[in-house]
Image (cartoon, rainbow over all chains, first blue to last red; front, side):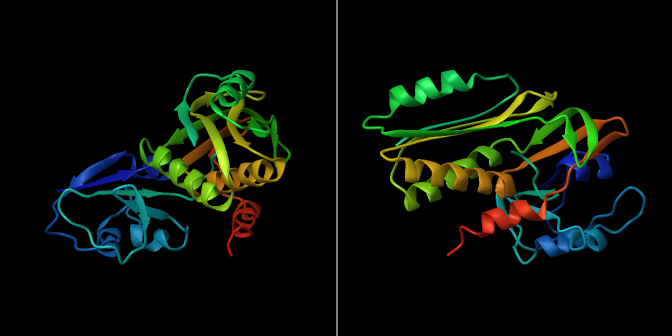
Length: 83
Length: 152
């Protein structure tokens, strides 16, 4: 299984802090992005680049080419706004 | 190097952080501290509160890495970072970065470097509460520009 988690505005838009995905469904971050859909039917892929969303695999920021393997934690979040 | 990183809901005392860092830093000649406060105005709109969320564990790891990068550029004796999460109101302390070094130059520079990268890389998100309701803030271009200037 792949653990998918969302933060901040993405968590609210998905209406979920995350879920598990069968890892035979996805090979890469880009593949996972294409698989996901917001509750209103919007494809996640369509907003991913447009909103400059970020992704981390096992808590390291990566890009779409990053491969995903069993047990990985994949986090999606908007640009950070701390400080 | 002394390093203390805390992400917490509780308020903190800048004076106590300063005292602890000072006592832990042998040979210190300069301590630069930056404290960020919650403002009651943002883009001319009244702000009544903030909600701070973060990515537990990843945030702390990123802050450690930012400090490591700073310590490769300047000889640092000690660093203390505190960032609050949860509900905050205008006037609250939200973040503190304190850097101890032998001389003021490296303390000033490293403190600014750490803050610039904290703002653009550390996984914190702010939701602002105001008269018009709640909204998630977006990163300012000026914050990215501030971090980019440290690139070689």
